[in-house]
Length: 222
Ligand SMILES: NC(=O)c1ccc[n+]([C@@H]2O[C@H](COP(=O)([O-])OP(=O)(O)OC[C@H]3O[C@@H](n4cnc5c(N)ncnc54)[C@H](OP(=O)(O)O)[C@@H]3O)[C@@H](O)[C@H]2O)c1
Image 1 (cartoon, protein in one colour):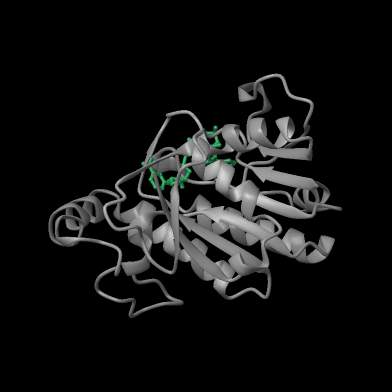
Image 2 (cartoon, protein in one colour):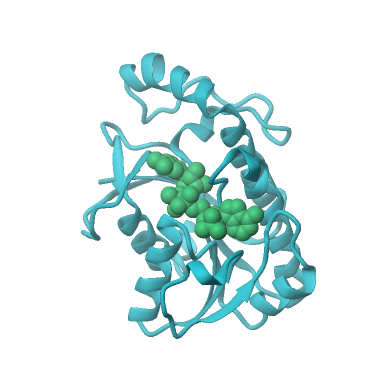
């Protein structure tokens, strides 16, 4: 398949790139700093997703079967990039006639209000007592800006007519790929506190052409 990987220099992005190339896909990597990429046979498009050049993104999306994105703020200076960059990417996809996109969000986002979803459920059905009442409130306070950005990114996709999938992982690890993970549509995974970036990438590549994952948010955990 022809895949466009956005933020291919990140933790999940590097895994997506490596696994997609190893599987024989024809890959275009969209990165803000090509120097941070390992040597790769992928076509590389340079773009700062905070203020992306529409023509560059259209050329990155042109002819793709799918766009896979692990875009997210690395620092405070990147705040808002997930929503803004995803919006720019979906506009480029529309012009290029590409319909399929998979993005990475985060497990707590199902309960984070956003303009498109002002009254989300108070609790995610997959979260147990500790996550609901102890971990979530602390993490949400610490990462408030980041989570608002991811919630708005999800709004962008829900408001589009694309074949989107949103992945909501819990705490990410750098462990190797196992292929042993649990997934659930529309909720987090009970007692699923961790998942490796490698396994998230593996699932995203698996899901590319699975119609049952279209218009779904997916909880995932090892
Ligand atoms: N850490 C966790 O435990 C956890 C848990 C759940 C969900 N998540 C979310 O999962 C997503 C992916 O995680 P990760 O560990 O792969 O993230 P990461 O390593 O921080 O990667 C973020 C990627 O976004 C890119 N990026 C940021 N601002 C950009 C801009 N203006 N233009 C172009 N690219 C830009 C970064 O590029 P550079 O390489 O150039 O910086 C990098 O490739 C993030 O949104 C994260 O919040 C994280």
